[in-house]
Image (cartoon, rainbow, N blue to C red; front, side, top):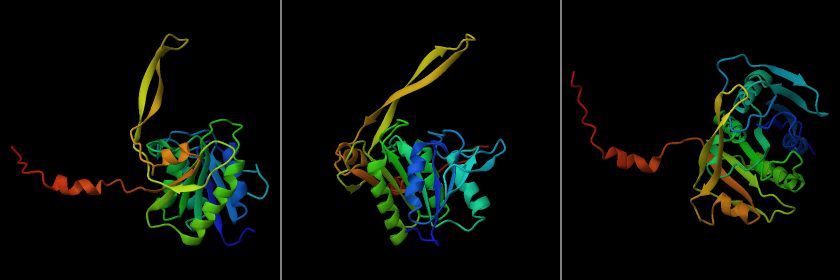
Length: 261
């Protein structure tokens, strides 16, 4: 039963009408009061982009019964910022959940993901935050088998909290059954990209980015391994990008730099 004193912010990057966010808000309604703020159009791959060069619009809409919903003209991160400052008016929600994304956000994809960047923004604001993603880009994706895991993981975060400056990146494999949950590290991988050169109807050249994911990590404790073996992958994620292990090495360099003016 939903707890009236638990306030839950739901966001995504696939847009306010995406099937994944409908599933997420339905599960969150079981836990508390839900406010949805999502982009008015798909914003996949936006990373941590924010809008600074044009006006932002926030319009209340009536899409699903019993849920306060807003569509935003900006990015997923804009959605979180506006929710905190204009809807909650600085009184932060108890948890921020993002997704459920159509497509995985494992390995290096976490850096490009609008889904995860929205969750990261929540964590930056000191809100326990989770990003959820499913290995299915289809508009008809079946999220049913994810539901108990989405609910259970969120309940655990509400109960136990998260370490400071930490959020969860949760990815689900495609299929009719999930074997369980694995707490993982992010796999070492990258995208091998190509840019196809094409010509538009006005005879102007343009480029279309394509590419494939390349895994450089065979570890069995990674998110990629877990997903390939039928498990939900949960990666504790941080936004402190300092390479702490490299500080001693860099400190050994000589920086005897003189101004030769």
